[in-house]
Amino acid sequence: MIFRSGLRQAGFSGFLSKRSLVALWIFFLLCPACSRSHQVPVAKVRPSSSHSLPPIVTVPVQQGGFPAMRNIPGRITFNPVYYKRIMARVFAISTIQLKAFPGDFVHKGQVVAVLRSPEFLTAETEVVSVLNNRGQHSSSHTSLLSLAESKLRYLGASSGEIRRLLKTRMPSDRYAVRTPIDGTIVKTGEIEGSQVHPGDLLFEVSDLHHLWVKAFIYPGEEGQVRKGSRVLIRTLHPPVRQVEAEVEQVFPMVDPLTRTIPIRITLPNPDLFFEPDLWVSVLIPVPPASGQDLYTVPAKSVFENRQGKTSVLLQEGEGVFREVPVSVYAIDGDRSAVSGALRPGDRVVTTGLERARARIRPSRSQSS
Image (cartoon, rainbow, N blue to C red; front, side, top):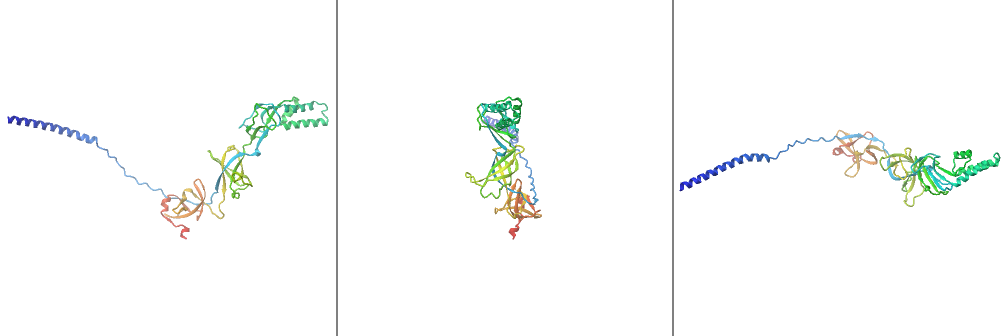
């Protein structure tokens, strides 16, 4: 009995040992694969390369500067010398034809509109009556004919229309309205399909090659802006255009609404780039103080030190720099006009300012 139980125990333990061996064998097979599958790849880090600092760059100081500009707004207007308002001289029943509209360019003497006018018909009929009257060689007949022709010219008849009437002796009620100058039609009156009375506006024409700019300055600035002063007119919209113009008039009184002084500038416009009623910038040169020497340096060479003073760095030798205070008079793009203890040919630092400032020496004013 005891022997059988021992065999059972031995067989059972053997069975356990076999299962343990199988389990160990499976464990050794799977674990290396698991460890390989969960292995995190290690990134290869390249050693960082040291970046070389930019060299310190200097350029020579140039003697002389450029004018500072005061910027004030201005508005383009028509030049009345080259602007005409055509008013009706006769009564007309209606407008038969309009031949030009706002924006159209017309030449001097070109017909803009044709009206039907009984008054014009009466004036031509008078000329024909004088021509048909007997005694054409008398002095009174010549005077009457000249008077009748003068009336036609006053009403607006052209020399060609009068010659046509003298040749055909056929009066007409067609009244042609012509432009007195070359220019652009700016406006037409409310004449289409309606009666026209003497004094009614027929159209407005202007030569846009000649314009005005109206601007305003504050009291006390009259000394900087005078009649004949040269200024610059610059557009506020792209493409930016800048032209030179001349101040035509500085008003001797103050505008009561703005408390400013109006000025008038003649604006040449040969390519019709500028248009009336546009706002522009008026750049007025501001002269430097008397006895002030100006120098031109790159704008990026000017900096503000810890004391809040505007300065530049000059190179005095290999690795030797000196700070010089300057006053900025004008800035134009990438250049600055400055005044200070500078000399033509001095080398001013433009690149590597921070590195050069670590080696600066006291300026002449500081050392003195």
